Image (cartoon, rainbow, N blue to C red; front, side, top):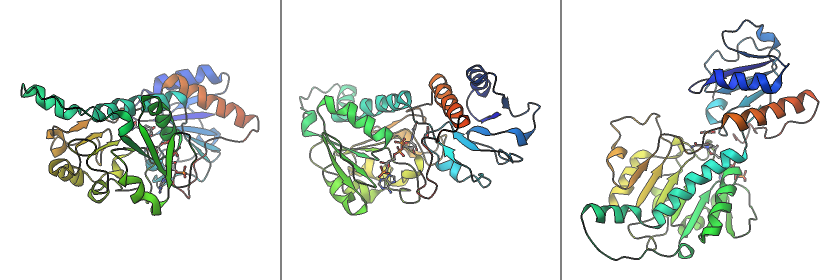
Length: 312
Ligand code: NAP
Ligand code: GLV
C-alpha cells in the first residue's frame, strides 16, 4: 500500500494520479480507512510529526522534493531507504531559473533599470559572456544540467563539488581546499548545493569577499536556488549595500515565507522569488515514483537513494 502525506501541495490530485498509475495497487491518504501496518511506501513532503507513526511494515520513503534536508531532521524518520526526486523536468525548470538570472546579472540589469528610472542615457558595455565566469556550487543533478544549458550561451564555467568531476567545458574544483581558488575566478556564483552541516551558512560575507571583482560592473552576483539555510541574510544585505556584491537573486530564505520585515525586500539589487525555482511536476513525479514502486515490488534495486551519512 502507498500512503500519501503531502503538505502545501494538492495531495488529492497526486493521490488520484497515483491510484490510476498503480492500479490495482492500493493508494491511501491520511484520514482514509486503512491499517498503518499495511503501508509499504510513504510519499512525503513536509511531513507532520506523527507522519510515520504505526507504519511498522514500511519499506521505502519517497520524497517529493529533490532536497531532503528537512526530512532528515524529522525526529521519527524510520530507518528505511529514502528515495529522492530526480527528474529531467525538475532539472529543466531549475535550469530555466538559473539561465534567466545568470543572463540578467551578466547584462547588468540592475544598472540599466536604474538608468531607465533616472531617464539617463549612458552607453556602457557589459563584458561578453565568454569574458564572464559563472561558478556553480554543487555539481550534482541540477548543477550539471545548469552547466550544460549555460555552455552554449558562451559563458566561461567553473564548478565546485565535494568530489572531483570531469565535465567538458567546465573547470572543476573540489573540496574545501579548492574553495577559495574556485571563488577567486567567479563573477556570478550559483548555489545548487544540498543543505548539510558542511554547507550551512556558506553564502556569507567572507565568501562574497573572495569572488572576482572588476569584471561585472557594480560587483559580482550571487544566485541561491538551493536552500535558505545556505545563506546568511544579514551578510547579503551588508554585501549588497557596500558593493561586495553587485546583485543577488534569492529563491530561498532562512525563514519562509520571507517576513515582511526583511530588509531584503527593499534592496533594488536583490531579486526575490518565493521558492518557485523548480517544482516537482505531478505528471512526471507520478511516472517516476510509480516506476520505482513497481521495480521495487519486482525485486529490483532502488535508485537515487539518499546517503544519510553524507546528508544528501
Ligand atoms: P545532488 O545531485 O545531490 O548534488 C549535490 C552536489 O553538491 C554534488 O555535486 C555534491 O558533491 C555537492 N556537495 C555536497 N556537499 C558538498 C560539500 N560539502 N562541498 C562541496 N560540494 C558538495 O543534488 P541536486 O539534485 O543537484 O539538488 C541540489 C539541491 O537543490 C537540493 O538539495 C535542494 O536543496 C535544491 N533544490 C531547490 C529547489 C528550489 O525550488 N529552490 C528545487 C529542487 C532542488 P559530490 O558530487 O562530490 O557528491
Ligand atoms: C524543492 O525545493 C526541492 O527540494 O525539490
